[in-house]
Image (cartoon, rainbow over all chains, first blue to last red; front, side):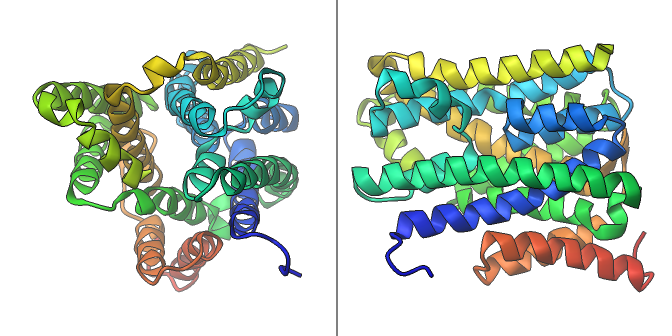
Length: 239
Length: 105
């Protein structure tokens, strides 16, 4: 069945199935958070960026306001702008494709694309993962939302465990050297410290602002490295 | 439409606008090492923050329950280079087993 598929297509398909199934977890947790079916479907079809979607329903289920959910989801989505830049840089898309390519510019499609060698494979990786995740994520969101209404507690199905595993699974490949490991540990500690003293959703924002400030500061203290492109090559390895 | 639905719509539009933004950045700016550096740092920090929130919190409380077992099981699967799909399933299975055996809440 997989004969004739290129490595990029195979990787794109497997990440599509993995992430798509995870949509069950999103659909069920969204209903459990108090959203209705249409609100859940709208988040997957229109927002379509997993981290932001989970952040949005996480704030709501924690009793947070819609405005706080909006802020958390939007800030978490900022990285997609960076992915868009990277995809524009490597795939050099025609202007007429940009509107729909932007919608499928997410962690998975970018990661699969950046992981390939050669422009053809990079394109196939982006399109397979982008379109594959979009279709399956939305399909399984609906299934999860319908099941979720009946099963009540997603924890009984281990879906909260699946969510934890899915996030560590996205983080893990980025922990390729000491620096990202230290950033991840610092971010986890800062988040844990912020949880009891701030509104739901805010710990993630606080951590993001701290990380961005740290990144700007750490570059300014090492001008030689940026002048010679040292940091860029390190970042590309991490991506 | 309820107030929540308006916030959902606003969030969806903002998410799309943010995605689109990346494609309108001139290539000169894209080559800025600062941008790449901030982006990669932010991504790692955000994912680590999400792991923490999903594994250890319930509302504004820090809690230890079956999800920490899911995290540990997922990490073991990752160390053994399991495919992403398997990692997610292992996490779910660990949470289910810990609760079924009464070892964790």
